[in-house]
Length: 246
Image 1 (cartoon, rainbow, N blue to C red):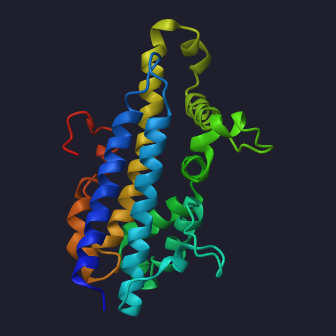
Image 2 (cartoon, one colour; image 1 turned 120 degrees about the vertical axis):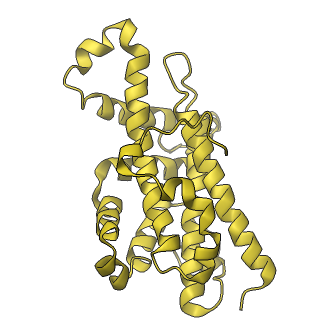
């Protein structure tokens, strides 16, 4: 059985995850034509998402085994005790293990959530960028300096490619990008769409803590997820993270 300290600490970890995600979205929405320092939102969002997913897996493990897991549950290889930072792997683990047949059959939103998590290509690209950043790309510049043969993907380049994909969704993107007066409006549009993706992801995972069957302890600590949990579709992309209490 888990100790009282373990129960307290998993709640603190979920709170930290939510704070990191909200702060990361605040920093994402600060990016504009004059501020293009991507490392801050990438660092915050990758850390927050990893923590959130690992807390969900821990709660599911507790619910099914009556104890918390050890480090090996987050290792891709059985003999590798070093926890993985692969966010795609963690998300796939959640969709395979935490979305029970009962949850999927009884909660209409669960079907939409799992379809989004498993098949939305834009979301998967965002998670892959955050995953690469969490694993090694946060040191990309230093990796190049140190002469690494394969320094990994440049996080700035990958994020800018993603921004361009969003931008090209506007049929008038070529005209807009040629007009300096449209610069900040372009960034606002891009930031909003990427924020919506991150909010939908976090909302989908947050639902697991309340109605997803992760267990009593998950429900007990679920209040930390309430900002994302209670976002309606019409609210997505409209939160003022500058004024939101972190």
